[in-house]
Image 1 (tube, rainbow, N blue to C red):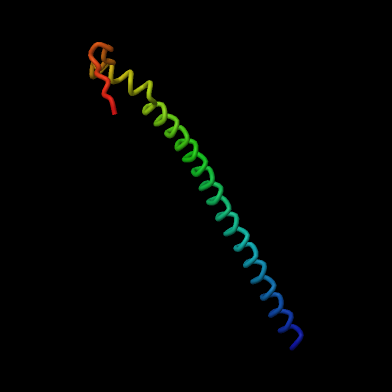
Image 2: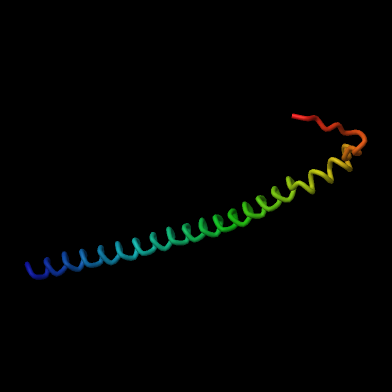
Length: 88
């Protein structure tokens, strides 16, 4: 009688451990998928950031600023006759 009880207790403990292992592996797989999704988002954001930095550098380049000054503000370089050279 005592051996049968011990057998049932051990069987129950074994099944409980098995369910725990299945639950833990399922939870870790879910966490792994979340990490992978965050990595994909990170890579996408890094790509966008690089593209924005390139766009910013193109918009503030000297040639771009000079072009906008000439077209929109109608600025131009002064003629040499309109400039004065000052001695130090």
